[in-house]
Image (cartoon, rainbow, N blue to C red; front, side, top):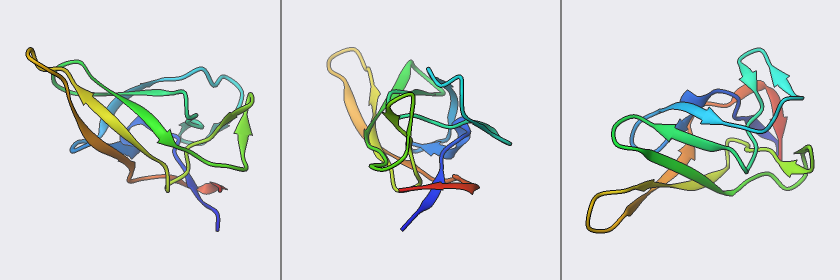
Length: 101
């Protein structure tokens, strides 16, 4: 079943909401921002913490890249000095007016 699509940085969460997103999408936009793609890089506050989407949609694409629905998951990488650690990343807030699977 279809679920809301991520379109704001704050909708991505890895212990705290993302503060920004680096995206290549310049074509599909909702009222709250550009639709997030699997190749987008969410950035979180604190040390340089970035995320990577592992599971995205399977039927809706923008510029041949899957979009990130509310069921999307990923990992955030926290780089401490001895070795990096990871935490799960999920979508907590999608745009209810735009849905995908």
